[in-house]
Image 1 (tube, rainbow, N blue to C red):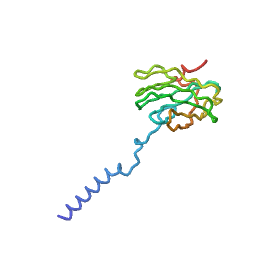
Image 2 (cartoon, helix red, strand yellow):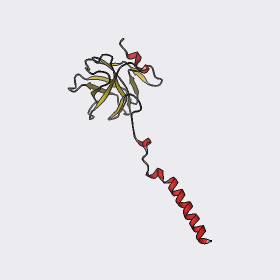
Image 3 (tube, helix red, strand yellow):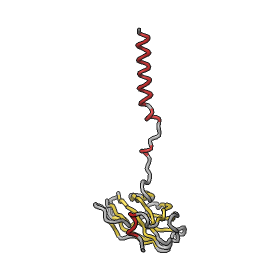
Image 4 (cartoon, rainbow, N blue to C red):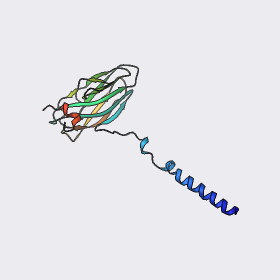
Length: 161
């Protein structure tokens, strides 16, 4: 009788460990950062840049779409360059502790700023545009940014047609 009881207890313990232990060994996809939208994301110092993309109808000029969160205590001027050679730097001021959006319609609780027009991108929709983001003395970062056209409803207001 004792052997049967011990075997039942061992089997029950084995089942409990087997059923609950899979989460200890299995890859947890929810712990990975990923871009859930059309654009890409990058962190530059205290700035979190999210959903970065360019909308262009003709591949000549484009409008930069992104949201910037300034987690720092100081106002900063974010410098943006595009293309392989870098080109001209366009700067935008992001206030300390603020979230600013470019190229979007009004969003409650977020400063919607004037669109950033990128002239002469020479990159067709569907391709990637190399862009460089930097401010102050922080180390900047280059990112391949997708170029889309205004076929998607959320980017219709950026169409030049």
